[in-house]
Image 1 (cartoon, helix red, strand yellow):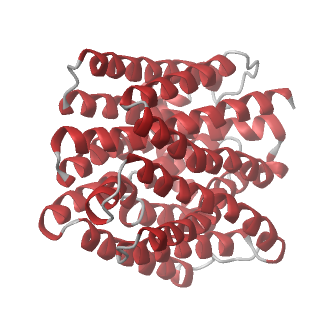
Image 2 (cartoon, one colour):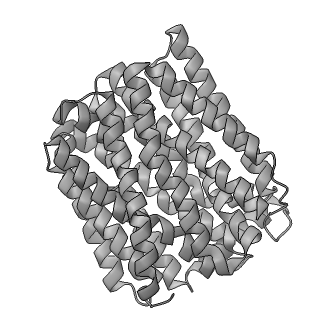
Amino acid sequence: NREFRLLWYSNGMWWQALTVEFMLFGWLALELTDSAWMVALLGFVRAAPLLCGMFTPVITDRFRRRDLLIVVQGTILASICVLAWLFVLGELKFWQLAVGSAINGACWTLDWPTRRAIYPDLIGRGKIIDAMLLDNVCVHVARCFGPLIGGVLMNYTGIGGAFVLTIVLLAGALALLTLLRTTSRAPLEPGREESSFRRMREGLRYLRRKPRIQGVLLVTLFMNMWVFPFLTLVPVFVRDVLHRGPLSLGIMTGSFGFGSLLGLAIVRWVRIYHGETRVFVLGSAACAAGVFCFSLSDFFALSIVLVTFAGAGLAGFSIMQSGIILSDSSDKMRGRTMAAAVLAIGGGPIGGLQSIGMVAVLGAPATVSIMSFFGLASVVGVGFLLPGFLKSGR
């Protein structure tokens, strides 16, 4: 399928650029401010646009998905180029980095659900889980090698090398998007502004009848609120707890992706014998448990092992998250349910606010310990307490 391959290759480059950018911005914030609090603040600024995720259909339902992706990708590329130029001139300030993060976060809020919503139109609903497995190969290869390569560049060529890599990857992903011929878009033609908001209300009513999607959205909310904020603080752990440099940061962040790659094989095998929702809950719980144990470690080798374990659990979460939502949604509601997923991912900025306050008082290790414990408890609670969520299905 030519269209699927082009989108898949583009996604691979896009995710590689995203992982390098995330690590690069965190390290830059730490170098510019020497403050864990400011690093957490930057993570919040990046994630804040996700709080408006439920409103994205007002935009995404009005345009062809391929055209929207090109515009959004071009905006991200322009933002990174401006920040790179300011860095070369020696004029880069924290507030400029924060503005760039906010722009990229807003673009990601439109980009991620649009990329996922295209898949059923390219390969059919029956192959969604397989498509998500392949898509997550891109995601986790990026999480494995993107930070590692970025860390090597930062260590041996400086910050400029990581900027160049990010720009090249984003430009390549954009070039592949322009080759797509798909006309995929929301089934309903765009109407008046009131019509868009009415469709949003219809989407919320639709979700009430879908317990599996409800469970996925709740777990997504809790994972983004209490578990994933640890990624923003990894530079703090590497420098201030483990006393290492940017190369070790790349290795540490890449271990999360390496674990996810291992987890893909596990998920593929376990899914044969268990339902998608069980794999989703078990993977999410394993990821939260791994992050909790990581927060207690002050040995570099042990931290690598624990982050790798957390990454393996992430595979079950990330594959089944979109797979369950897309397979259980009608064509008419697909864009709206993916928008609800973006809103659930919007738990990230709420967690970011919590981590900002807690880091200032308790420090990074205690903050990650407390938040990941709540995340683990919440995932287990949803799995056992939400009626109809763990209904078996293959």
